[in-house]
Image 1 (cartoon, one colour):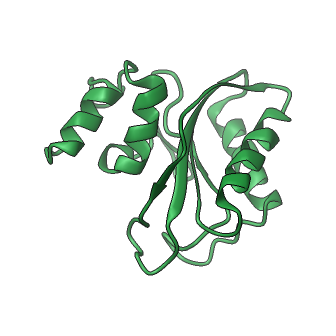
Image 2 (cartoon, helix red, strand yellow):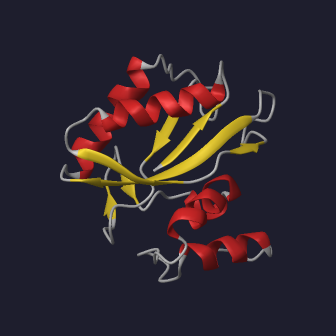
Image 3 (cartoon, helix red, strand yellow):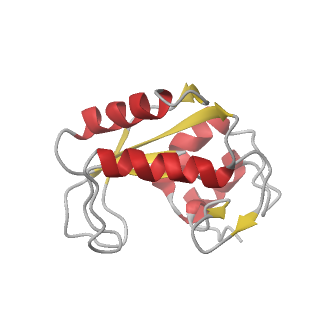
Length: 153
């Protein structure tokens, strides 16, 4: 999962989101990346983000996991006013084992993750050898390709 925050106490928001996820009986955080401070993506006239990734073990389905994620975001005060706008917390399901899923409400792998250094850098830190099921390349390879300016498709 990718987590980001650019409102309020950003570091505390990330920690709080992790604790709320772990409060769910079927979710265990097993790895966490460093926290990176990054410029906003898409809509640039807003505060910088703090971003990180976590790896979880869970028995819940992808759609049930999405419900948990949305509930945590809502409980923390996330308001969806504009695309790429400022937010107290953003939690994205990036990968779910080797599943490929395309639904209106959820895409796995996350459709934009391979284009975003603020996702690939912390994700490579905790899951660099994991193979992206759509591209057949490791997260570390995708990170290196993005850094080198190559397209990741």
